[in-house]
Image (cartoon, rainbow, N blue to C red):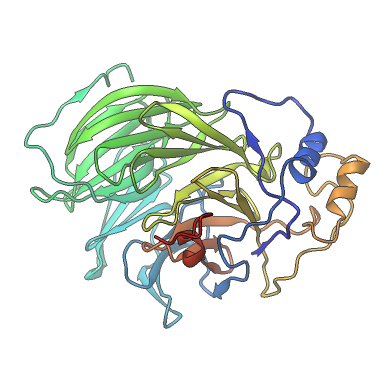
Length: 427
């Protein structure tokens, strides 16, 4: 990936407003109006790791994990799970030749869990990955699996206000570690449920029911809140204590389904990525939208926001969100007024693509838009689309990893620059 030259900063859509402009007008506004990209939060020249990854469901793009302080990545490639040593640049197959197409992955503690499109769950211990347990959890697609580090579990469990909210398929899996009980696996399913199961026996602890297929859930770092999104514009908020959840609000993200959500490290802000090309951020303390950001390719199917991730540690204060193809956005969460756009490159060449004519995938563009994208410092919409398979910050926020089909890109974060403020004070 390469960063766009200083011609673009950000375009922020005020909360609750929508535009009915055509793709051409929107593209011109995004490119040449109120945006000037003079910010580099990450080094625009990435280190390329030759680790192949793959997506097995066109909407599920979260198959690259950096689960611990160790310099290693976990990813899905076809019917396999690989561990990649970043320092040695060596790949090790953890799970091979699964009898289903994995679409979601979770790694935590000694466990690795993989979810499939027909309710499959494969559970293995990293200390003995050659003997995985494969079951069908009920439902259909396991859209996502993840780890929750919340502490500790309460001795009793209750779910309030959940009856109003089942059909079939697992979408999101989230392993939760509790100091006083067996680890928990949270599975979000297309059958309109979030199931809580114990590991390694996959015993059902309880489930939440929703009015729509569930695509993703995120537990706040302090372990007290959960955000859930699915095949509607609704965003469901819960308070959480151990195994005890209570619904506190239902919010609205945009006009389409959402496939990713995340919390900032302070557990005050949460973001949701929607298929219609928006990344929306709320403050949990007011439950009001702080900002709604458009993707670079907003208005086109390739501009769907597939993944949102906050920097997880340090005073880095960044939000990254990836698009369906080619582009990653990195935003300053201190003001939400500065943004860096990264454009995927399939080679080691970090030069910007020169402009060209044509629509690049979505209808004829007017002459003004063609002229804007023919500028020397602009990307070309004729560049080949690169499928983005995953997006993760390193656990210490020192790097941003972007999964592509042929490789994983590592962008180093400018931590010194992020520690410096306008007053020249350093924290």
